[in-house]
Length: 528
Ligand SMILES: [Zn+2]
Image 1: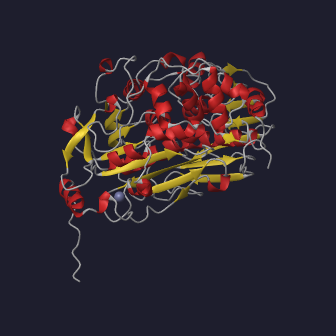
Image 2: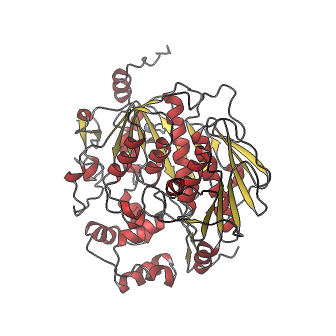
Image 3: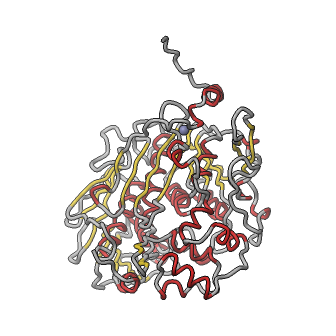
């Protein structure tokens, strides 16, 4: 297998012609178009939209990108069809039936119902298909859809929704969620929530970051005008403006965290600020003396006195932070992830409790000796020693020199063209570039198209799981994983699995505390 040079990837992003055809008289089709354009516009420069004449509707469907061309009659390489009739050129239909996406490269599968999450899922799978067609000769392992398929958000598998699937538009889900991490996945969850017809309850948004240029590639809510804004504030604005019955808050008001604030990164265990990020406001709730080394229970002191939560969604990028969140002893935690390897193509979510199955920390328990902080992960990404990466990331004014670029190139084999754009830039920018891309690292080149559909796909799955539970539908898998390069394993239900030996979740005192706090039945005592 020969790998394509970086120049080919850039040429594909530049020249591959993507077209979106929309039935503008159908509001749910407009929502699909808005998402598809928001995703595709981050990878492909040559994107046109047909079928939206009304200026207000044009403004709406183009609101997740900086600009969009409304232009009929082009001859594209791929067309996303968001209408009931088909087109002559290579195309992908993105229809929806109950909670399932119905995708087809031939005839329109037809729509049943008006479930907006299924519609968005279809639009993001169509974007995945366009990406895979464009890069099929460039990225290894791509297997294309040929024909028709349905994928269901309820079961997490291929096929139709169960017959007893609830109607989304008839319900008002009442949620109680703390979302930790309003990054690429977290904001995709927020976007999906905004499209629901009804939503009430409460969501708390926890993040310490501001939107910057580096977020543009995967962050739907980051158009040019959002740069410099506090991520939870941007997400709160879109959520609150769509859902007046939803209480949206974040732990500290934005003015407390000025943009120029020096950034602190994760110290390891047992420190006062275990997650390390000032905006997280995570402080020890109580400390357990009998554990060595002492671990902290975490909470958010400026919201509810740091009490454990009903459901915490962990959309973060560090094993340590995930373990810290788990041992806040929240009733349930949902781990949401995209792959951190060389090819950012896989994704998943899983829901955990303390008890007989693996907790969120168990999933990372094998890495206990050296779980890797976010800083260590970044050091591995660029192939530099930890201290050198830390020095750059903790001082925002420190920028990359020619000598630095040469070192980075030696360590990781970036191409000349790719690495040269980071001269005089902070290291953070290079790292964010790597993070948002489907990278194929070859001997001396890196080919890396942005993959904004991956966080959106997992975000829609996670949102569906949250909403289905909130409306009382419990038959939802606790763990779903997917692979955006291989159509046949687009998503799959996976068992949660056994707890890891030695994990804190198996400590009897922890279990007793958890059951007592959440008024859960005691563990049955089995006579020897
Ligand atoms: Zn565990």
